[in-house]
Length: 342
Image 1: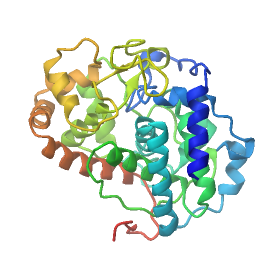
Image 2: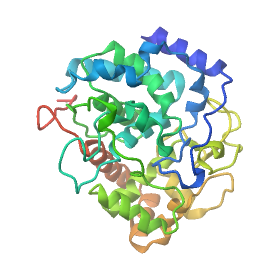
Image 3: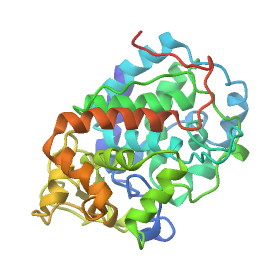
């Protein structure tokens, strides 16, 4: 597996393929991370996977039987392969985004699975990948698919969330209290409708964040803590409509050069995001309207200032919020799920 990952990394570094075109309505695209914040993915757009490896509609038949708990032994082995993938490709941001965008479609007002959305592996299908908020995530699928092929007794839903949590931890972030056993949807007709994820620049940023995250059953503390994941990654204007084409922090990569990051060390998970948006002292760092709202809204500001001053408090609350997000809408088998660290 290590050789395959190294070969994939070499292909990515050598690729000169252009980024996917900006999705419809660039500045109104919905995303936890704006469309290319995890911009090392752009360098990986040149992966040439065999047709049978791509998680497209043709794969739906193979996935129809996947409804049981993942195999714990295979999940543990997959975690090691994800760690190797992270070391060789620096794809931490896009793997975080992959897990978040699969789970973040959840609607607490809908009881039925999978109509309620959430962490169910639906993001592997074309119809959802083509949602504006998911521009570029095909690159994450191409990275993760060899691991799924190697470990067929794990679900996409679990793999996406495993990759996201592992990326946070490997970037220096907190240990996420994860559980596994998520069932996959079986076909593209079970994908959620477009428009479930947050906008980067809505008219009323604080109100918009609450509208979206309250629909998921999350609260103000969760909103601010999860926003702290912008410590990772970059935004590319050609995809999302946000950010500069290049800054002093991004002109040399790693991965494809360019984009604008929220923090100077944009592959390191810490509390610098909150410090930077509070100070607003560096014009080479990105502050979106939804970022600025964290220090403009009185209720959000309490948490944002706390996290800027206390990284340990941020890590604690972030780990709890990330675990909540990763479980949204999931159908577990066994019903209580299971841990890889028992």
